[in-house]
Amino acid sequence: MRALRRILRQVELSSKELEASHGVTAPQLLSLLVICEQGSTTQAELSRHILLSASTLVGVLDRLEGKGLIQRQRDTVDRRRIHLVPTDAGRQVAATAPLPMHERLVRGLPALVPARRESLAEHLEELVDMLGAGSVDDAGVLAPGPIPQPPPCPISCVHA
View (tube, rainbow, N blue to C red):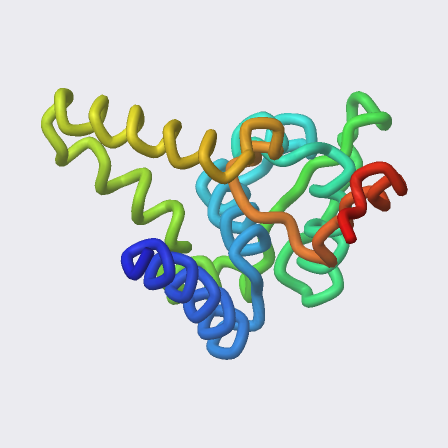
């Protein structure tokens, strides 16, 4: 339990530090890193790359654009396509911000021998089952915003 608490706490602290120091959340930074790496990409391509739903990504991109870190540019040939392009300020943030925690994890996992990675994956799946989290969305990054509340418990499940 202590290890799990430390991990959850580190996720929280890293997110707050990133936003305080660079003005972006982890999903915003991850999106910005991909946009900078690609030079130009579409929302659909970015959504597939970082495993965020298109509806969640819209808010992330709106905030990045509002902060002056990206621009949306209409394709000159196909006016229906919108390209996401980093601004100079966006490139600066991408170059100086620390990697989001989940990205450090993704980059660190290959250092484990395959048998150790498989064992870790099996144990984590057991933990997912114990916590009843099997149906929880496994998006590549945490989406900002409020945590959805479960539906109300029917009267029959209330115990006196």
